[in-house]
Length: 263
Image (cartoon, rainbow, N blue to C red; front, side, top):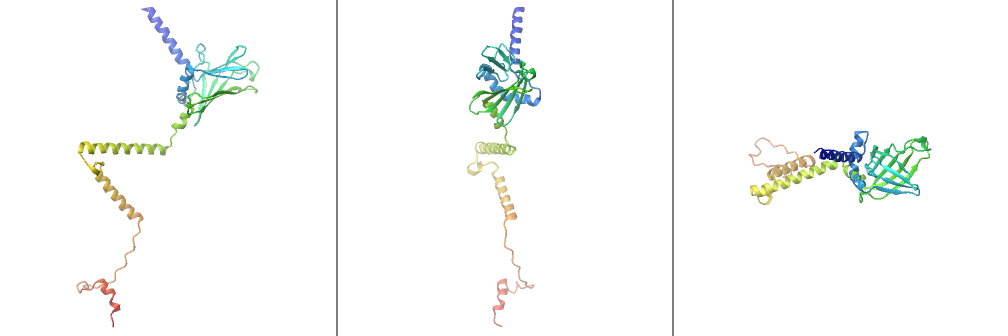
């Protein structure tokens, strides 16, 4: 019984450690909100680490996961031809920034330089560019910038569809309102049509929901437009007629022709 409990605790601790080791750790809430954009690429590189090479070194890269299972927390590992390895940054010392079609991931706290950059810690900078067709497209190392007194870094470029999520998620307020209006109209018309036809038994145009209201509404709108935008000819002033002229059979046409009579 105690042995089973011990094995369960060991397995649980390994699983918990693996989950912890497979997560980037960021300093701010804003950066933590961007963490989810890397989830698909994180899962992919957990089983398929990114490997890039130049003439002197091979680099193994993980996105918020360690590329080597027996070396937790390491984000990028550099290996030379002499098989000497260097850690270029830890995933638990990460920073992230994002734009509409790019994500910038930074690992800090790697092994110290021997004689460059004031012996500061190495850093890996990973620029992820939008590629809508691949979860992981091309990958390359752009430069090792160590010819400076401080803030040296290794710069990598990766193309991935995860960087395109910021493009697709940024809808303008007007677009959202239009989509919402179309959805409401569709639900209203389809639901009203079904109710009128199958529950009320309406036929023809009577199947349109609240048709009497919309007819009255259309007439009111037409009257409003007519009043506001249409110009009518001015009514000509009527000529003066004395009291009782209508009783004498004098209408307006006869009165207007009086000047034509011979004197």
